[in-house]
Length: 326
Image (cartoon, rainbow, N blue to C red; front, side):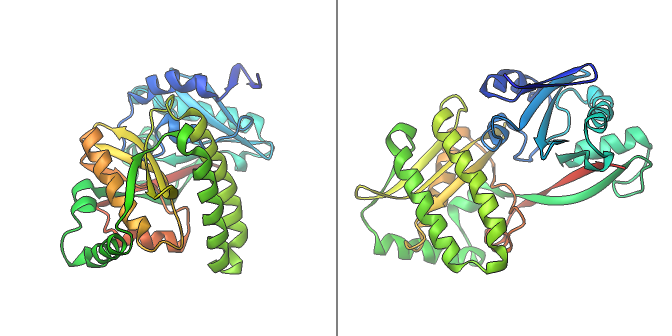
């Protein structure tokens, strides 16, 4: 098994076997950001790029890319352990990387960031200048009240209700099934391929390269979902017309009052299918997890995805930051 040794630290490959130990440390973390689950990180990381180690009794997840080491999350564990671990993690990265300017920690939530800044300079604000670190605001997670997404009440959701009603009228014989990777896996990959083809047809040329990079990761993530669906404790549904799949979506429990949507794909040519399956899945998530909130992740920097997520009127936005070494 691949591993890295840096100073006295042995960084192990981040495999499915790391689930139990990561979730042990995640139990000490209370955040509404969707990135703080094992499944969210595991499905997006290739076998050769993710590594973890324990620093100051915290779980530390690293990413090796282009021979440079970064962190996908801040150290996970009890609050009184995190700040010292964070500094030591920067030392690990700085000792490995060709330049300290490559060293960074992504997806840092508000609470962790403010606690770290207070630890360095008591009373400092998030964007005040720090001697050895630079903080940058990155993407936001879109978080909704589950009831808003299910009931779609009021003028704000008038368009969504119309899209769903038109879909149900045009396709009265659609059915919803619980996602089964063995039963639905092949059709899910075929639907993904159709979705990619249709997206490329209408995508501005200057966005094509970024899209292709992102979709290669998404294809890999879906394959991991199919392979480890039960181990990752995921839940999903499938939208069918007769024997044909026209949509699928998969999510997970995020915390005691929140669920998260990991993946959603629908047939580009079946208008209203995206709105319909999303609402139906929100019903499933609320019934299964008794969740008050549903987090649909960030928009990955895509303007069209940002507009779609804003159109559902988020209840709140959870900001994610990156801390750089300098």
